[in-house]
Image (tube, rainbow, N blue to C red):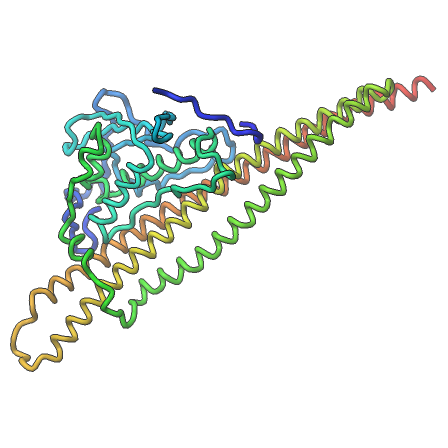
Length: 430
């Protein structure tokens, strides 16, 4: 893509955690050990209902380093039975508004779905609706973030191909993260989002789990004394991680700005040699060669800058939003624990010590334990995804920089024979 004027888009009319089993998690049978003493794994080939084989390997990449990178711990070996993709963005223009819709395609073997395949169109506000429903009905879980809805007018054209494609990738990643989650992927709202043709008719669907209801009405009247050490460590880690990502994001944006300014200068620099060559009969070929080298360096730098803008920065921003989501879940967990501590303290100060502990205190304790178990599981999953994402991101960045310098090196090396030929010709003439 060109770094110049953006093109406009064409228009169109877990298993249980320790000993606790989550009520929405799928029960998995315990497999007996294999005769050779090794652990049993499911070696059955995955296939879709239409008989086509499913490729669960990482997508191929033209990047040489990325091809050598083995992401063999993807999903911790879980068997996937739900595949979701977001593609085919289309622009819709009406008298009231202009908006973009995306095709959401689903293939699954789950019995919760009436059909094995679905294809529906969704706009950004539909994705936002889904995330809000997941956050309300699954408050103990980490909900993946969505890309920011609002952009600065005059700075970013939200209907340009570049912006729409960046948002499509982010929405696709959001749905894939939900689909790969052992609890969120079984949420009824997610089912409706993937399968209902007209989502507006189902927006009144009110499915809040008991956990969701109990956490929803927890007020801020309870104050947590001390956050447990393991969760305090999570909070400290998130604070440091936010700072590091913010610094990298600011520096990366500054690098892109400087590269763009340098690119403008290079585009003016090359043609000077071309115009000079027209008036220099003896030096015409070498001067044209320099102009060609500069043009090739321009193209290589433009690709490097676009890769950094479209591939590197979005991952940083996704994880900055991810951190905010994780902090929100930690706050909810703290509120539930604070409520439990307050009720437990009230029971301890009762005059009648022989009466049993009230049921609401026991329920509150259950909520705390469920919150802790779900949060720990999602934290581990998030750390695993983060490790894979940043390993792939940094490897890709290294490979793109190598390709950039190799192209520049090849361009300037191609100029040396021209200069040598001129030198040899001059010697022979003398």
